Image 1: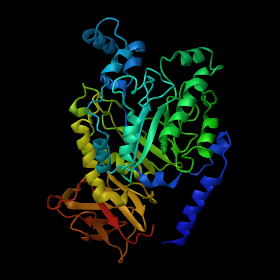
Image 2: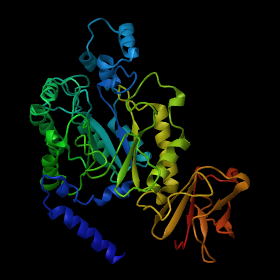
Image 3: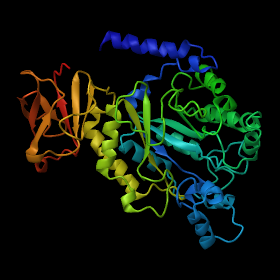
Image 4: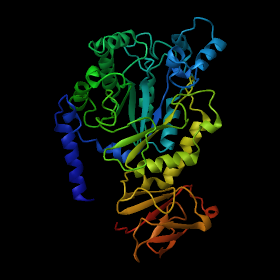
Length: 451
C-alpha cells in the first residue's frame, strides 16, 4: 500500500474531524468533501410520499392542481374524486402495505449502488418519519402508520457497501407559516425557526444520514433559511460531522456556487470536466421523479441510455444519483427494478472503471462518438457505447507503444485485444460482439498509458 496515500487519507480525516467551521460560506466551503462520496460514484434516489397516491403528472401534483394553468390536473380530479376532495385526503390511501424495506435494499445493492437517498419530506410537507413538527401529517400518524425512514435505514445498513442518506425540502408549498414569511418579504422567519431547522435536527439526530440532500431553496435567500448556521452545526457538532456530505441547495444564490457537491440543476450532466465535485441527479422516468400511472413505455430510459448517463457522468468527475418512484403501496415497479438490475449487472463486470475512478486527461474521444474515458490505479478505461462498423474501433486519445496492452473487461477473462497504430491514432480490432457474454456497452482497459 502506498504510504503517501495512507497519510493523505489520514490528513483528510483529521482535517474534517478537528476543523471548526464558522457560519459563513468561506468557512463552510473550505470543508473537505469526505472521501467516501467521490469513491462511491453511483447512488439511488427514491421519491416517495403522498403524491404516489394520485400518481398522476408528477410529484408536484398538489401544486399543479391548485396553482397551475395545466387543466389536466383539475380535469383529473373532477373526473375521479368527489367535490371538496382535498390533497390531505390522499394521506389515508398512502398505505405502503407492500413496502418491504429488505426487498428494496436488496434491489439497490444488486443495482451496484453505494448510497441511497430517500425523500424524508417533499414540498407537500408530508414527513416519512414520526416528526413532532409535522403532527397529523406524517407516515406514523396517517396512512401506513410506520416510521418509513427508520425501516429503510435499517435495511440499507445491512449492506456494508451502502450508505444511507435523506432528501429534505426546505419549503412547503402551502404551509401557512411559509406563506406568511414570504408575504413579509422574508423579514420574518417563523417557518424556518419553528419547523425547518428543528426537523432537520430531528432527522440528523435520529437517523444519522450520511447524505443530506437539500431542496426547495429557490424562493428565498440562504440567510432566510439560516443555512450557514445549520451547516456549521452539522459539520462541527452533529453525529455525522466527519462523514456527512451535502449539496448546494441552501438558498436561491447558492446553487452551483456553495455547498459540498454541486447539483446545479435537475438532470445535470454538462458533458465536460467540472472544477468542483458534482452530481447528476436524474430519473429513469424521463418526465417525473415520483411514480405516475399514466407513464408510457417510451417515457422510460432504455438500459443503454442509463449506462450512457453513468459513463458520461463519471468520466467528467461526477457522481450519478438514479431515481425511482415507488407506488403508494410501496412497490418498485418491475420496469424500474429491471433497469436497476441491468445497471448492476453491467457494473459487476465494469465497476473497476467506475468506482474509485478519476477523470483522465481526456473525457471522451474525437474520432468516435460514444467513447468515454476514466482512469484508476495506472489504467485507462474506455467505454464503447456504439459498436463500430466491421468491429474496427479507431481512437485518437490514448498514446500507446510496444509495451501497451488492451483488454475488454468481462470478455474471456483477461483476453487481450489486438491493436495497431494508425497515423496519430490506433485501431483496435474488437472481437465479434455476438461471441461475447460481456454486457454492452463494452469497456476497454489500457495498460501503461503515459498521457
